[in-house]
Image (cartoon, rainbow, N blue to C red; front, side):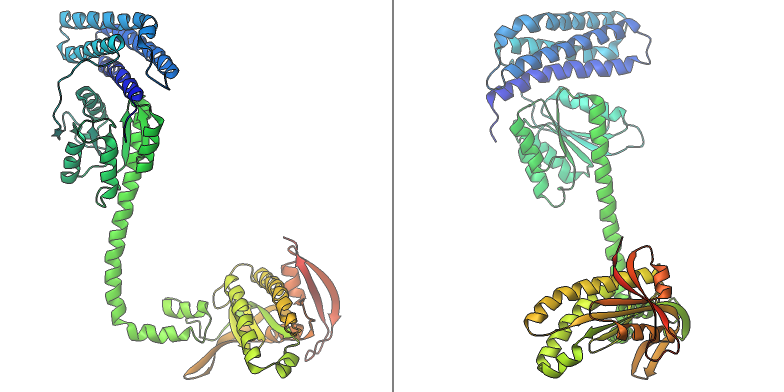
Length: 516
C-alpha cells in the first residue's frame, strides 16, 4: 500500500514534536521526586509551548488534508512557539549542566535535536538527511522491575521513538523488547514469547502492514495483539491496519494515559486468550483420560443407551448418570398429569389407508414430542393418537402445573395449524386435552427385557376422563390445576360434571388462553 506524500509529510512533521513532548513528560516524571524546581518549571513551560505548537500545526495540516500543507505561509504562525521551545531547550540544557544534573542532559539533547529537525522541516518541507539505522533487535530488559506485568515488543525504526516507549513501559513494570525494523521484529517474535506488539507503520525494510499480515497469517503468532502507534494520520492507513487485525491505532504524539489504558486492555485480552488455550489443553488431556475410561465401560454404556428407546430422556439420563436414588424404584410423588388425544381419529383410521395413518402419526408424534421435551415433561406412554405426559417426576421441576398448561396450549396451537393441511386431505381431526394434579405411585412396570415407567393413581384416571370429555380444541382441567395456574389463564368454569368411571361430579374448567 503506497503512502500519500502529503500524509508522509504530516507524519514527518509530527514525529519531532512527539519527541519533544514525550521526553519533556518523562523528565518531569523524574523530577517529581527531585529537588530542582527551576528545571521542573522550565520543562513545564517547554511542554506547554510544544503542545501549543502541536495544536497550531494540526490546524495548518487540517487545511492541507487534500494536498501538501503550505509550510511557508504557516511559518509566521508556527515560528513564535517554535522559538520559545528552542530557547527553553537551550536554557534547560545549560542549567542542567551547571547544576550537576548530568542524568538529564541526554534527554535534553534529544529535545534540542528534535527542535532543529522540526525547524528544518518547516523551512524546507522535508526532513534533513539522517543516518540510516540498520534493522536490529534488542532484548535487554534495562532497569525493569523484578516482577513484570507482561512482555511488550516495541517496533519502530526511529531511535528516539523506541527509547521513549521502552523507558515509559519499563517504568510501569513491563518487560520490553525492541526491534528497529519489521524484519528484526519477526526475528524477535520467532525466538521469544511476546504478549503485545507496539508497531509503527512507516519503516524502511518491512513496513507495519507487511509485519501485521505476517503475524495474522502465522498460526503461532496470530493471537498476539498488535497496537499500531504512528504519526501517520492517513485514514486509509488506519482502516487498513484494523482490517489486517490490529487491535487499535494510536496517533503520535499519544496521551500516556490513553496508551496505558489500551495496553492494559490488550494484555487482558491476551491473558484471557492464554487462559482459554490452557483450559482447552487441560480439557483435551481430560478427554483422553475419559476416552480410556469409556473404553472400559462400553458394554455398560451400550446397555444404558438402549434404555433411551423405552424411557424418557430425563429418566434415561438419571440412570446413566447414577449417584441418585434409583428412579425405577417404586415411589410416591405429587405430579401433574396430561392426557392428549385426537378427536375424530377412530373414524379417520377406519377410512384412510394404513400408509396415510402411519404418515400422519409420525408427523403428529414428532411435533408433540418436541413440545414435551421443550417443557421438560415425561412421556409415560403413547398409544396411537393418545399420549400421557406427567410433570415433576422422575425429575422434580418448579411449577409443574404451569408447565403442563403451557405445553397443552402450545400443542393446541400447533395442531390448529396442522389441521389446516389435514382438512385439505379430508381428515377432520382436533386435539383434546385433560389435565389433573395429585399424588401417584410411580415406578417400573413390566417384565425382564421390557420395562415401562408408569404412574398409577386417581390423578391419572381423572386426567384421562377429562380428555375423554373434551371436544376438539378444548383443554379441560381439574379444580386443583385451576387453582395452581389461575393467574396465568383465562378459563371458563363449566361447573361440576359427572365423568365416566367417577362416582361424584367433578368441578371442571375449560382453558381459553394464556393471559401472561
